[in-house]
Image 1: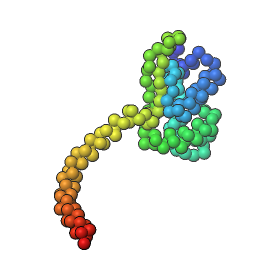
Image 2: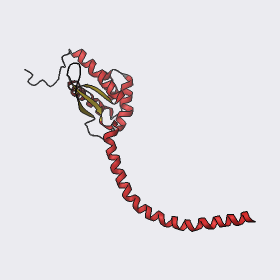
Image 3: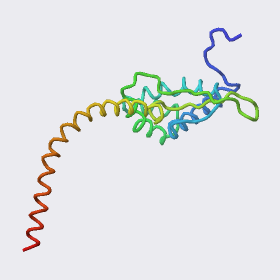
Image 4: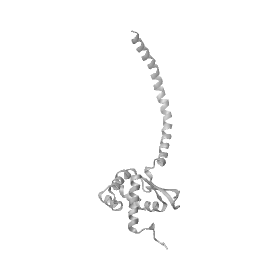
Length: 169
């Protein structure tokens, strides 16, 4: 019975499990999304989210704590430089798990785990809302710019007649 045991052991001994989660976390930080099984994705989410929270405050102490988990200085550098800059205002929930179906070989449940702020498809919806707002403002600006354009239009033929008069002389 598993009463009160919150850690999924993933059928591995503790050293193997810690190394596997560290490697998966480094891959997630580097590539921003990875495909894995649902059970590993859920375990990785619990493993990596506290590390991302620590990366929001860039101090030597936090870097050393994160390095003790990840054991990859390039992943730590990218986490504190790029990832922390994007998730700075987010209070939590840095990763998203999307189920993909079953793997062909052994029928395992597969999932994609990704960093939320680096997905352009889901974040693109926010940009469309901004475009809609700018379009409303754009209609008013078109009316304002039409009046100066109408004033500029009579000046253009005058300039062309002056040029043609100069060419004739």
